Image 1 (cartoon, rainbow, N blue to C red):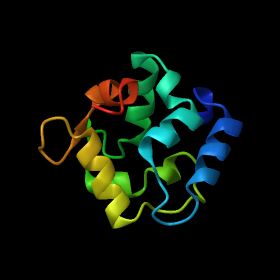
Image 2: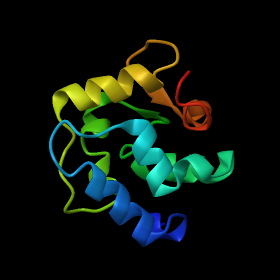
Image 3: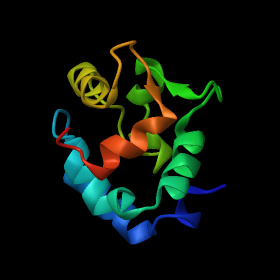
Image 4: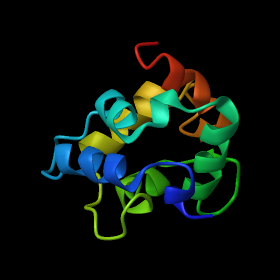
Amino acid sequence: MNITDVLSADDIAAALQECQDPDTFEPQKFFQTSGLSKMSASQVKDVFRFIDNDQSGYLDEEELKFFLQKFESSARELTESETKSLMAAADNDGDGKIGADVTTFLADPGS
């Protein structure tokens, strides 16, 4: 699977442009601009599997650090503060991992 099989290359480029500088990544804005927030639960799970490097069913901080590079290999790494912020926002049960139930977070990123 290629990420552009489910998301527009133009939308991905626009989302990455918005957060190209360190400490400018805002998850909700990225999800909105890239089109992730408009996807069905099934499509989001496909993207999740694409991001889940070790196919463990969870994303840990090490995988999140390279989140942007999953959308474009030349994109920057997330900073430590961005990684921790994304984890805190999407880790529903506080176990230090994000499960495939991340679709709830994408649907309502304010939760």
